[in-house]
Amino acid sequence: MSAILQEPSVAAADILSVVEQELQSTPFIDVHTHLFQPSLGELGLWGIDELITYHYLEAELFRSSKIQPAEYFAMEKRQKADAIWQALFVENTPVSEATRGVIAVLKAFGLSTSRSDLREARDFFASQTIDGHIDRVFELGGISEAVMTNDPLDPAEAPRWENGAGPDPRFHAVLRLDRILNKWSDHWRVLQSKGYETDETASERAISETRRFLADWVKRMKPVYMAVSLPDSFQFPEDSLRGRLLEHAVLPACREFDLPLSLMIGVRYLVNPALKLAGDAAGKADLRAVERLCVDHPGNRYLISVLSRENQHELCVYARKFSNLLPFGCWWFLNNPSIVEEMTRERLEMLGTSFIPQHSDARVLDQVVYKWRNTRRTMAPILANAYKLLADDGRAPTRPEIRRDITRLFRSNFERWVNLPDARTNRGSSL
Ligand code: FIX
Ligand code: ZN
Image 1 (tube, rainbow, N blue to C red):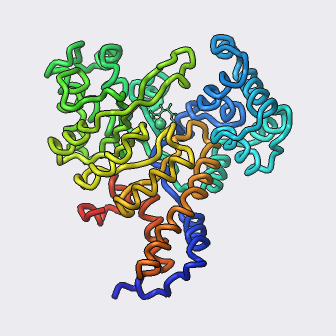
Image 2: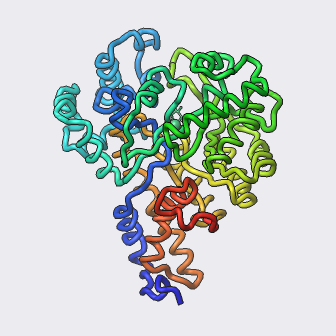
Image 3: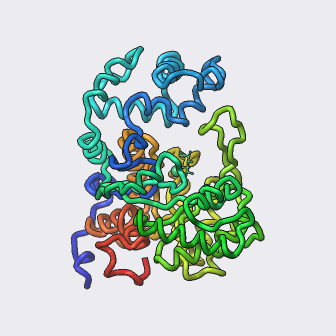
């Protein structure tokens, strides 16, 4: 009998505390963030002013103050942060998920949470150095690695990679393809200016040149996966620039380099452009596109997150049909405890531990602290409940089983999917 099953089973009364301990002691891999390793310079955001001017809080500002977007976006960063702090933390009680997050970060660094200004916090962050601060934040957040979002066509980021940005074991790169797949008309000339024979119509020649571009960037960036966010209107297959580039350039390149493709589906881009980054919304997508991708391209592996609450059950059903589909995260507007609970319970019931429950989507380094604290706090009773049901049904879990499951959910499902070194030997076995 496997050693793990010979261990003493955990008493029902202790299940929650054992789950909490194992969640706390397992370093997670944060599979999707907008953080950057230090060698990519000031692209990486951190500190109190970045934390407060997070686009989630900007959206909330305009609901709780008379400031108009144009007036706000004309302000300096500090002024913006002061305006948000005043409106959401002084004149109102910070009970929303995003405002509570800021309070949790201040508390984690031993800073006051109820001052009327940001002076103390600014002094604290000014006294930190980025490398040490990254280590401290990762430790407080309980993560060992963060997966970045790297855009090879971003004019601020691309030159840093082209000039040889050094690797950092705390960060993994991802080749993000939104500009190529969603905005080809605006960006084919950029590829052309870099020596690739692309054209407006994405001809056969342009598509093979795009494959060459992707191959060059895979060698330069060594990404763990390729990724794209897609609108709620996404269709596949589709006779469009995106449809052709996806089918004939991106999917083959992923197969060539044995990289998964991450699809984040369901964005309604800039429904209110005046709010800039805070102007996007969510829409229900037709997930038959996912079905066709899995059926027509079984040699590809997919990491999929969908933005609409109404699409979650369908995604679970598709994951039961296609083992090359790995659902991940409670993305963006879904990253709220009430919805995380609903989604995670459904996924556990339908997929066991064969999914990735969460990612932080952190845009500011310090957000890692509260986003993962919240996740552990929300996950503990959900997992404990699943184990209590199992015990009621006749098999109480052992601590090593709980540890293995948590490791699988927050580390090894991802490691295996993206061939991270220490899972390489298991490659090919089912998840
Ligand atoms: O497309 C994405 O990766 C999204 O996560 C972002 O665009 C979005 O702005 C965000 O920050 C969500 O949390
Ligand atoms: Zn994101």
